[in-house]
Length: 150
Image (cartoon, rainbow, N blue to C red; front, side, top):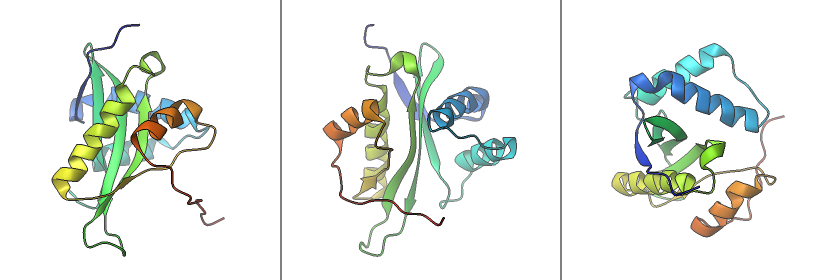
């Protein structure tokens, strides 16, 4: 497959259904689902103006959404500046390996630079080998292990 013509842009209100399908596929990859009201509240927050909420960028090719990323800025006890947490990143299966994920991450890097956030970080599961090949090229693997309330 040839390199797709991909544009990364901010999420818009008219993207709701296409965004929902991409996010459903992302969640299915991680073997989870969320109730309908979570889709609605998340989408509303992504388009809202509360600086504590997440932001969203989408990748578009041929008039269709083919990828998404959700990220937020937050304070960090070890830094003066805020840092950027990239929570969700997804490229549709038909465009994987064609640069969509890289473009989305680089767009988040650019947003972090504009925001004055020196750090962008994210998590993935150890079995996500396809994504990790990209992450190993554009990020640095840290030694941290995630724990959460049981």
